Length: 250
Image (cartoon, rainbow, N blue to C red; front, side, top):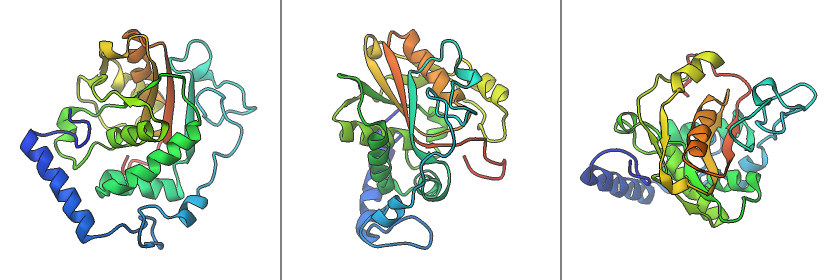
């Protein structure tokens, strides 16, 4: 998997890079939030200021809405990650910006989103490495970019941490998670990921776009720990409290 551009042969990957660069020259940055379109930035300060924090009492480990703010049932016992941080809820500005990145191919918005995610994380363990949640190669072939890899690059740059683009492999294709209940999501992803030995002894910052039930980051975190990682901190752009409807892209 190519970390910067995702999927395809070398010629195709370089072609995409050239196309992106040309597009950004021909179409200068404008805020991707509907009704804004302010020139000069992919995500303007006014829209960033409108991002709401996660509301309600949250599980201190996975950030799910959880009654009295105690650990949620899924995090009792040995959760594979140490903590989850998110910029805000999967709604409004964050949802629109992520859709622009994932479905409209607005590559430039990955940088501002990654900077916000890094700020939400605050600090990482000394010497930590950054790993993006891997997409399956077959699915990447039909996309313009690997959004999680771009976000991981941005988080690594913001925190001045090494990014390990080949630390994880998604070794089999999985069904889209849209519309699956928590048990179906977990079963769908079981055994889908494998980590390499480069994470042995490392503390890992695992980066993804959205966390809903946590099935994906749990499986990836477990694979990282099985490969010898010392700990995993999950850093996502947005936290969804429930799965989006089947009609919404995810």
